[in-house]
Image 1 (tube, rainbow, N blue to C red):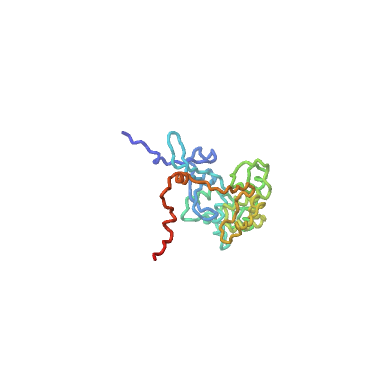
Image 2 (cartoon, helix red, strand yellow):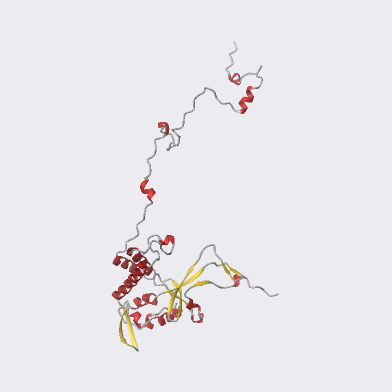
Length: 301
């Protein structure tokens, strides 16, 4: 009897990305490279001299129905295009610390990520590198060195271009969009401030924190103001009410009695319980009262 393959033995993922990536996917390769924001090794996909960042979304309780099987890992991966210059920038700056010009193959060096860096090097063109570098030499021998002013200008252009697109689009990036989700806005166009801030945040995901703060100051981006709920503004905390009956030892700070309710009249009679009514029907002749057992006995003379 042949053994059936269980779902746990199937190694597969659900992946979302541009359709052309999955046509002749033999040319698609995955490599780890240091992330430009924090240096943590992350997965990137390479195909046709293009770079795509691989991001994974995972929810706690989620599965996939794939044909006649159930994939218990309900996460899914997304491939989004990324400018390869973002990945190369940390290596370019590191090689330029001493102020020397260096060839590209000597710039893209990291023994832990050699295969990925070779793929990244193929995606970089001379015109790309001119955006962030000064160059020397001829076609057969070109050397590069980072230029801080060019880098700032290149990053600023990224932000302004993206901000203009977001401002004219119907994608909601206004304050609170992270809560409601990345969705289509029904309120028309975004304002300039919210679009600029969102564009800066997206670019900041691929640069160091120091450089992000420099760009924030350059564009005059302010931190979002925390809004206070209307109820909290209109209804400040009420002062504690006076203790009941002016009793300083009373613990109750609020008087919830209905002062408008009509007061009950004192009829002078007490409502008896069922047991008390039955006791009244008992013949009490010859019985002593309870108090007589506790009376003081007269002293004997």
